[in-house]
Image (cartoon, rainbow, N blue to C red; front, side):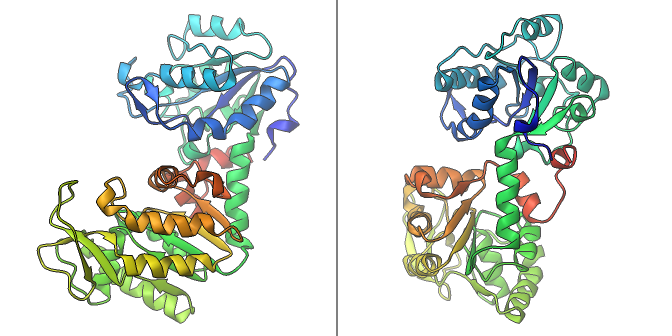
Amino acid sequence: MRLVNEANLNGSKVLLRVDFNVPVEDGKVVDDTRIRAVLPTIRYLLDNEARVIIAAHQGRPKGEGYEREYTLAPVALALGEILKMPVPLTHDVLGMQTTADCEALLPGQVLMLENLRFDAREQENDAEFSRELAALADVYVNDAFAASHRAHASIVGVTELLPSYAGFLLYREIETVHRMTTRPERPFVAMLGGSKVSDKIGVVESLLDVVDGMVIGGAMCFTFLVASGYSVGTSLVEPDWVDWAKETMQKALDKNIKIMLPIDIVTASAISEDAETSIYSIDSIPDDQMGLDIGPATAEAYGEYISEARTVLWNGPMGVFEIDKFAMGTRKVATAFAMNQKATTIIGGGDSIAAINKFGYDDLVTFISTGGGALLELLEGKVLPGVAALE
């Protein structure tokens, strides 16, 4: 890939694809992690007198035109506040006025296109939509790692029509994962959580080739516990993947890879802030209780194991951390993860990032990946369409 610093930018109109699909509440951005991650590329473009046209999406609109719920207006406002300069938003994604707005840009100025997904042709990688987008600019830069697993017009189509480059964030995301999976400092431990085993099949199988150990929490641990012969009450289990979990644990054993599962669980009868909680060892979970967090003994054991690692990847919380009653496990594991300053610590996935932010440890992490699905696919060894298009 060619990096953005290899482009001749002076005075050029640059179409910069970013992933600003960020949480918005009451018309305000409530988590600007993804916005700030792209700042090095934006500032580099502005410092080199580029005229910057930002393209992004928000949510899942119908693709039939403007929807107020998914407007990028709050995002443009947030970016402008960070850059301390106006960031106007176009009225439409494309059209005569959008073209005129782009032409009127001066070197060192920024303009944001309205939500690309207001036009269904974006997700269809439509050739005409790609041509209309490309016509707005002289150069294309992709810094949207979190969207680069999608073969959309603004990710793939425009690369066939404009000189195309990778932004600094995109490059760092790929380089970090490559280094972690090919030459990690050992021991290398993966912390995996979240709700479903089926979402992590490819990741687990790929990581078995490179890690020294895994700690498994979240609801996905219950499929592994059932595979180990335990009864887990009403906890979330994916029956179709129990045999796979059993085979995976045997593969790990054959490769001398340590897989840690919970030894105790925080339970309740329902996911509720008012629920009465209990702690049970994994061999005594009642039939009417569901596991909603790893227990304190498990959190202690996981924390000690993580603190000894020299490379740690975290994807997925240990429990329903959004509710304080079920946040203890994720908090303790996050603390061990963040306080291990001898290790390279890498975190990815929206819930994991929300957890590390909630507990105030984001500044202590080596690298926070902006990608969810893109990160998982890269870890699985898949080729990302947006990356392939730049090669």
